[in-house]
Image (cartoon, rainbow, N blue to C red; front, top):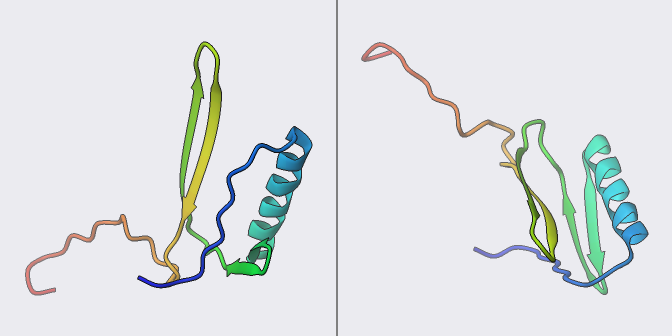
Length: 88
């Protein structure tokens, strides 16, 4: 599988996280999300149906919040089931 990819893992200030999330929300609302780091850029076009996974964790010394979003470019929901009579 080949494709475009931009990755980032860093410690940033809380307000920078707010800026990233605000940009992400705006991109989802408009239907286009641009992710750029250095010379690399990936442009994503979220479909109407998005698979969303949210994980929240609170331990003794660490807290964690993860969001994962994915979609198929054809815009179809792939977790649906179709049942019909034989031959139809």
